[in-house]
Amino acid sequence: MRDAFVVQGGEALKGDVQLSGAKNVALKVLIASLLFENAFTFENIPHIRDVEELVNLMSKLGVSAKFTRKDTLTVDPRGLSDHTVGFLHGCRIRTSFMLFAPLLYRFGKANLPNPGGCRLGARPIDRHIDMLKSFGVQVEYDSKSGYYRAKVKGTRISATKYRFDKPTHTGTELAIMIACLASGESVIQNAAREPEIDDLINLLNRAGAAIKKFDSEIHVKGVPKLQSIEEPYKIMYDRNEAPTYASFGLATRGDIVVRGVLQNEIKHFVDKVIEVGGGVENVDGGVRFYYKGELKCANVVTKPHPGFMTDWQGPWAVLMTQAYGESTIHETVFEQRFGYVEELKKLGAHIEFFQPNIKNGKRLYQFNVDGIDKGKLSQAIKIQGRTKLHNGVLNVSDLRAGATLLIAAAVAGGESVVNGASVIDRGYEDIDKKLRMLGAKIKRV
Ligand code: EPU
Image (cartoon, rainbow, N blue to C red; front, side, top):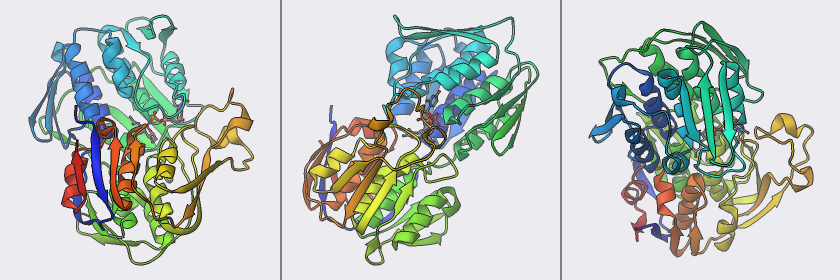
């Protein structure tokens, strides 16, 4: 298997790049379509490994899901015939646990393995399980087999009023899907607010669901069934890809137009680029990011939407190695999302971990802090810039860290090897092809 990228760095990247369909929508709408009565077609579905894994997993359950054109995928849920997700398939993709919704709806029961995906800390699904219980679902975890076994009490899921202790993106989406076909009206409070959730809501409403969102409160009137619609559903572009390509442009002192995103969809990223002295301009169908002079340092705190997304902080860290002065990044969403730091240090980056003085970690941090030794928390990094990065051999720990290392390799002088191309392929469609179109010297080996 060709699982590394070789990058000859040091070129300013220039040109246009088209964003692909959003990974974090594609995975959810494919699962949601299993709630429908008949076949349904989606457009703008990215060819990424996570989608491939999900399609394989769905086919193991009897569902037919096929790409009919480059980005058009049709799912026919009528063959769904199994309520148990195979361990190996379930573990390969984190969103597999969202199959609780269609499996509980179709069979009244579901057996799902503890999910896999990028390890960004403990990443438990305790909030999801607590939410399911509130809908009257009995859930037990069998630690020997690693399976969650869930069962609907009675004949139909019953509506509920549920408040998430802390917001969760996929938890909110699962709650919405479960509530759509429950008997009665559900209210979900302290819900996550990512725009990707809105795309899922639009799809479900077009299929006959009755979902209304009022900021972080969501009202869902249960309906007896969801009907597929004739028109294909085109999902949104991947706004998390945008800061990645923008950082390729800015950090290599280049000029890149990112097509498929509006400034307000990545507002907190754009604001920071302007603060550090990068160029930003609206162009037809996208945003131009360009280097216009020395970059200044800045401090970033990641937040759930609306805020500076955790998915953007790795690319930002590379950019800050190219800015003058001391920058900080404080990660508050996941407890381990600095898997790229030791690798960047191999290229000569000056980065140190530290723990900011915070008043109420329980409130600030989105992960569960109970049980974590406070003395051991290290949720922030300091980056001293500007550093002339040199080449090296790098190892990818997770998806966004992978993209981060590619940016660093593109900035560094000389030839670098980034091991773990397949991890990057989980979420970035044709990243090497797109980068070559921007003038990067990158190949798979
Ligand atoms: N959490 C728990 N228990 C739960 C649920 C969440 O402790 O039951 C914690 C998480 O471990 C995390 C925090 O709460 O520390 C917030 O997690 P959230 O549930 O919001 O994240 P997620 O749903 O697992 C999705 C995206 C992530 C993205 C975050 C934030 C998908 C498939 N994943 O994760 O995307 O960073 O929301 O928007 O939608 C990525 O694309 O690389 C990625 C990781």
